[in-house]
Picture 1 (cartoon, one colour):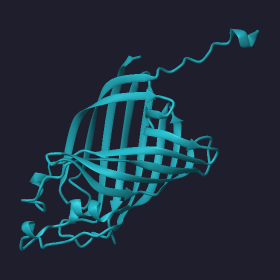
Picture 2 (tube, helix red, strand yellow):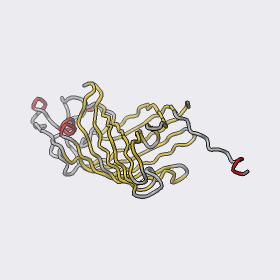
Picture 3 (cartoon, one colour):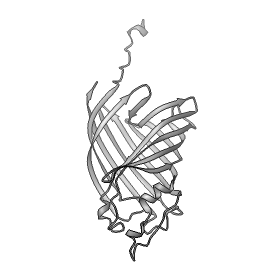
Picture 4 (tube, one colour):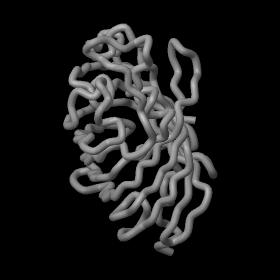
Amino acid sequence: MAQALAKKPLKQPKWQVGLGIGGQALPDYRGSDQRHNKFIPVPLVLYRGRYLKIDKGGARSEIFENVRVQINLSADASLSADSDENIAREGMPKLDSAFELGPSINVKLSGPSFNHGWGLRFPLRAVTTVGGAGVRYRGYVFNPRLVWRKPNMYHGWGLGVSAGALWGSQKYHSYYYTVLPEYATAERPEYSASAGYSGSYAKLSVKKFTDGWLLGAYIRYDNLSNAAFESSPLVKTKHYAAVGVGVGKVFKLF
């Protein structure tokens, strides 16, 4: 009888859309000693499909999953900075916004789910830039990392911690760090980037999603020591921090 009277949990809608604003303070590119601050409106789209999910955990397509191992498609993006105003890149082509997409093998080390507890993630993503140069393939990146997440740590706030390393293809490194002969100067000698290690990083993030509001913030530290492109004249610093904040409201459900 009690079970019959118990309220059934509300089913979440398949689609949710809204609008938010995001801000970031970070270098013009990894290794730049010039920074930019930017606030931009961001459309919010949440989708809970059978194979594709876009939620507070990011965009992913779940291909395979068992108790310990998950294979999915993961994505990431970085918006273009005002690199045409960057002194180190003066006279060089502007860097466009970059979008990453590729498979990730995720291993659960502890916790009740892949987004709660300790885990290992091994994403391999193709990089495409979109901007003044059109749509261009820029190589690939590999980003193995150790993660720890607790979705509801304090009053609905979730905490995430990750640390990892990056490797990039020659084509990817060349886009950011190669100096072609036509762009070489006395202060910026010709340089050809190679594939290999891209540095390490650590990241701390907090998120809260309640009553249709999505709040989040992160801080990230990068170390480019011993990176394959360390000697590029475009690398002006090997240590830097970046921060970002965001707030949004889901205002339509269907």
